[in-house]
Length: 589
Image (cartoon, helix red, strand yellow):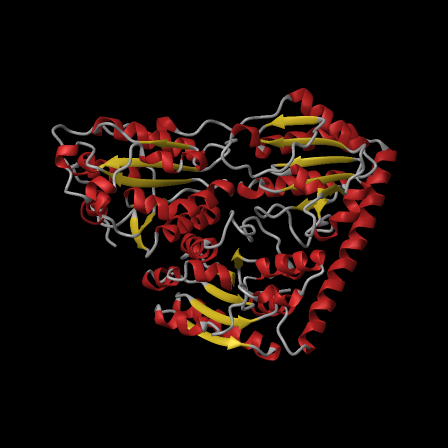
């Protein structure tokens, strides 16, 4: 990587790189491909491999996942580039993950030449689609294929603005090989990108906010549910303030870090009791509100409400601004008494102000709020004490449990400035770790399918590189097997990441479904492991990591050996600033 002086563009792909630089794109991840060879050359030669710098990957799904994790950790997009229609098809799963997770990113592609007389025999023909964006149009926010070089700046600027405007989601822009490779005939006109920034965030309707404030203040048992609010880290302290003004319990659904796990008003793992009592619910950036209010039978797939029929609901989000018909990331239509389309980062502070005004000097309301605060504080303290006791008891088991896994990792990293970039150890990280700061957790599964974790964790660690923060991932084994070569990318680019394998030697989600079906049908539950267990032969992830150039440890099987192994990993990542993997054989639960 080198810093270079500003050059005059000579080819169309140079102009594309100038647009990347104008938008301060730090990295671009790709597996090399001929259809974007012009862009590749411009990045490394014209641009000096600096802003953007190439992140070399072995699969397009990994490239996009890295951009996915980076965006969540850095709160800004990076670029993934994919090779015409075949690379785009490889990348499509990861693009869908990013769409479901509402992550901003630019996915660039190459095609053609669209002028058929310039195509090479066979390969250029079978690798060119009409129109290529159709492949991902149902799970991107926008796609474009500039017709001429003169259209490139407007297309790029529009794409960047669209992907970063709420609700955020990936954008795909495809460049004809001729546009990339033809020499410029005139000086390219690069617009002033500062005049094309994304629009100011939307505020909620004032009357609707007033009604929500009145309902919150007058409710006997208010409840706040947040899911994607923490995509804007500045909104987290705003939510804390609102909750504290009302002594309102908060359920963090976990698509992002929304509320501190250590806060007395956090009821994320005690939600059922609170949902049953709630007489008013405020939903903040909750994509699937029906799912947040119901429980579903694993055997029959039938859902039923946990809440009472008369509970009033208000909701603030931008969800209705991005809905596609191809696949739904929400369940049944939920009735909402007071729906508001707004950015929560501007709506929540105003809602807090209105609540303060309504409470005023009302002694009765203050007494109610104080009593609720005390009750919730006591219950929160007791819950966390019980979880700690339960986890500690697991240390006497023969095998490593998910509770013990989370406990020992937490103890080994608690003195560090850490960020959990992937994984929850079956929910035990939130119960045992001190999640206190915005972006300290980047959310749960990150999308819709396996293969997300390795790339996304590496992308997040890339975003945190040089920050002094320790990136920690708890990596499931099935997910790793989908995109295992991602760890070579971490080694290649010296990306500091502590990756702990939760190796339960099974595709346990599927095994669990098999168990439930067998129970319901009164069949042999023991056969659920057929076609799901990954243990004959067992996979040695530590050896696999070494083969990709990543230092590793394990497999760790004894609960007593776990903490020392994690401490060795922490020390290595901090001192060497390189990735480290620990293979832990652990129970599914």
